Every structure is written in structure tokens, then in C-alpha cells.
Length: 243
Image (tube, rainbow, N blue to C red; front, side):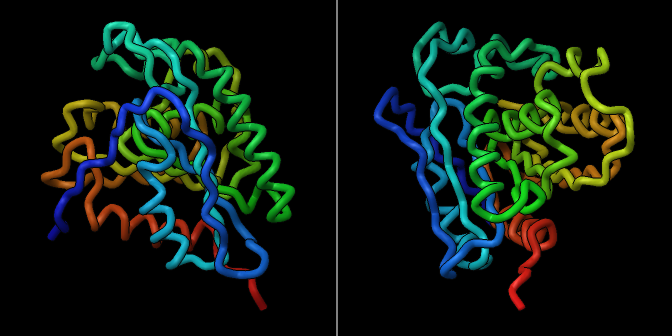
């Protein structure tokens, strides 16, 4: 049985967003999750859920960066918060993801800051929903950060610009860092095929621990079962190390 689905917030705010933080309820966090919002959204759209996860995982802090505002070709050039430009809906993995390198610099800076705060990049998970999940994968794979991380979480997203990775820009050695892909079987915005192709692409690059979880009756949104699965996965990727 799958719990009721809830559509992910998308506020289409054009300005005024800034990075939000959800502090650990302990005096010192021992792990961190960097969570990126989707196209047209802001960190505020995911604050509610990161607060809920933080209550379940009191040793973890959450950092929610804000995407820059840029024209998006898919939406007729309308400026909106976007980690990179999107041209269409069909061939997401092959699009060049123009602008992702610049956004990746922001994600990398946050990763380095969080690694210092919690002691190691091995205590940091990169995560996100839709385009934010794509950025988590982009930062991990295109910017060669995956072997350092505790894990990567991509909800209703995909790995952008796989052609660049196929050219040999990622290490060919096996990687045991866990990757969780969550996707609705009825997603019409980012089709389930994109998640399945992402799993295949990652495994072809030597990323062994790629778990794809599909949810019935779920579109481009979230549901209770998925959110519970994510909390359980985060607890394993970022175990409590308090003595």
C-alpha cells in the first residue's frame, strides 16, 4: 500500500530566495544533507519536509540552497529559479544542462563548508527533488565528488548530460557510495524511463549501490511511503555516531 501523494511545492518566485538551514537539535550536528529544490521553486518549498526529517534524525542538519534566477527555454524564456536551462521534456539525460557548472560551484562550496562543519565529506549527503536531484547527481558525478560522499539522493530527477560522463570524466574504479533514486510511475514531467536510464548509466560507470524505488499512483510529487523510505535511507547513510 502506498500513502497519499502530495504535490511538491512550486511557488515560481522570481527573486528574494536565499539559503535556508535546519539546525540539528543537538549542540553539534555530526552529519549534513544539502537539499536542492526543483525548477521554479525556492528553499521554502522544501523547508517543511527537511524540518520533519530533522526531527527524525536529530544529529543531522539540513542546508537548502537557492537556485539562481535564469531564463528557461522550456518555459518560453520566462526567468525563474533554475539550476540550469532545460530545453524539453523527452531526452533529459542528453541535454547539455547549460548553467549546471556555475550552479555546481555553489553546491561544491556548500559541500566543502558542510564537510568542515561535520568533520568529513563522508558525513554529507547531496540530495534534491526534480532539478535539485539532478544537481545532486551532477555535482557528485560531473564534479568528481561521489567517492567522498556519504550518499546521493535524487527524488523524481535524473543524471544530466550523461554524454559528457561517457567520455571518461569519471573514475572507472568501482564506487560503493550509495545512491537512492525515488520516482513516481505516473510522472509526466520527468518520465520514469529517465530514472531507469539514470540507474543504468550509473551502474555502467561503476557505481554499484544504486537503488531505484518506484511508487505506484505517484506523479511528479511525493508520497508518504517515499518520504518514509528517504528517512530510513538517510539514517543508514548517515548513522548516529554519538557515544
